[in-house]
Amino acid sequence: MSDDEIILSELPDDELVLQMMDDLYDGLKDEIVEGVNILLERGWTPYAVLTDALVEGMRIVGEDFRDGILFVPEVLLSANAMKAGMNVLRPLLAETGAPKVGKMVIGTVKGDIHDIGKNLVGMMMEGAGFEVIDLGINNPVENYLAAIEEHKPDIIGMSALLTTTMPYMKVVIDTLVEKGLRDEHIVLVGGAPLNEEFGKAVGADAYCRDAAVAVETAKEFMKRKHNQAARS
Ligand code: B1M
Image 1 (cartoon, rainbow, N blue to C red):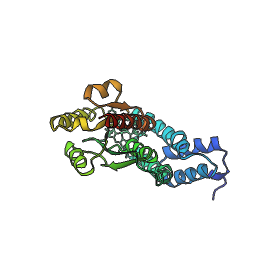
Image 2: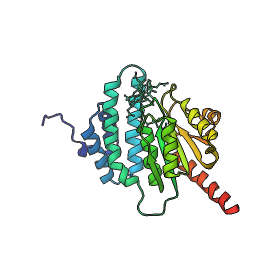
Image 3: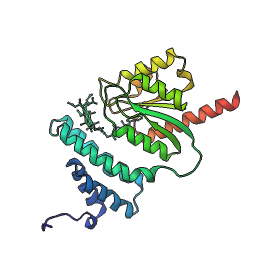
Image 4: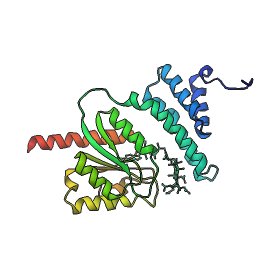
C-alpha cells in the first residue's frame, strides 16, 4: 500500500461521498461497492446512498460526457460502477412480503440502450411494493405487447434517454390505442430529455421526472383505479 492511498472507511461522511463521486467518475467498481457498504453501516438509508452519492455522481459524469471531456468507454465504466453499487442497494430497497400494490412492466424503448434510470425506477417501484417486470433495453412495440399479454400489468413504464428514441413512445402508445389496450393500462414515461408536455403529446398518463415521482405517480393512479373499480 502506498502512503497516499485513501482508506475509504477512515473518511468522514462528506469526504467519503465526494470520494465516491470521484470513484464513480473513474469507473472504480470495487471502491463504489465498498463506499456504499460503509455508508450503509454508518446508518445511511439505501435511498440516501442512491440519490446523494450515486445519482449525484452520475450527474457529474453526464455533464462531462456532454462537454466532450469523457467518452463512451469511460462512461460505460462509470455506468458499470453505478450498477455494482445499485446491486448492493436493490435488496435493501425491495420490500419484504407485504401484498403487492400493483404490477408494472417497464422497458427502455427501441434504439436506446440506456438502462440505469429505468433500473432505478424498477428498484424504487419494487421497494414501494409493486411487482416489476423489466423488459430491459431496446424494446420494439412487440415486446410491450407480449409482456401485456403474458403479465397483465396495471402500469406500462417506458424510458428513453435520447431525443432520437423518445418519439418511439408514441409508436407504442398508438399501437396500444389501435389494439384497444390503451384504456386498460396506466402509461408512465420518463427519461432525461422528456418533459410534461412531451408526455401529454404522446398520450401518456404522466411524465415522471425521477424515480421517486414515478413511485408517487404510480401509487396515485393505482388509488384512482381502485376507486373506479369500487364505484362500478
Ligand atoms: Co448516453 N447519452 N449515449 N450513454 N448517456 C446521454 C443520455 C446524453 C444526454 C449525454 C450528453 O450528451 N450529455 C446524450 C443524449 C443527447 C440527446 O439525445 N439529446 C447521450 C448520447 C448522445 C449517447 C450516445 C449516442 C453516444 C454515442 O454513442 N456517441 C450513445 C447512444 C447509445 C444508444 O442508446 N443507442 C450513448 C451511450 C451511453 C453509454 C452506453 C456509454 C452509457 C449508458 C450505460 C447504461 O445505461 N447502461 C451512457 C450514459 C451513462 C449516459 C449519461 C451520462 C447518464 C445517463 C444515466 O444513467 N443517468 C447521459 C447523460 C445524462 O443523462 N445526464 C447520457 C443517471 C440516471 C439515474 O438518470 O437515466 O435520467 P436518468 O433516469 C432518471 C430520470 O430520467 C427518470 O428516473 C430516473 C431516476 O431518477 N426516468 C424515468 C428514467 N427513465 C424513466 C422511466 C420511467 C419513469 C422515470 O418510467 C415510468
